[in-house]
Image (cartoon, rainbow, N blue to C red):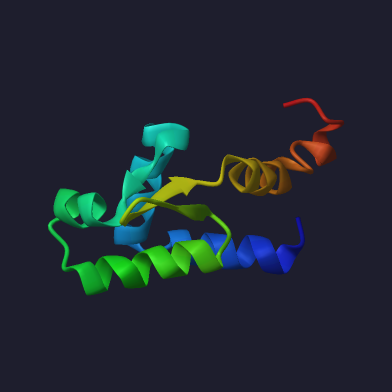
Length: 99
């Protein structure tokens, strides 16, 4: 992962509502959740939820798919793993790699 992508992902998660949305989608797994259900769950107007989902999508942290009349959002676990790997890349390097 490039540093710019990591910064974008971390910036998206640096907002409390988006962090909570992402954490819920991680818990839901690949099944994800419909946008309307997310809006209801968080008691958030649909337009506000749409804004947050757009920010998380643009950061590469979530994906969407259409199922019938609903848009289902789910965490992008591969991208999440890339971000975690990027953050841990040099873990304890100055300590001989011993954490």
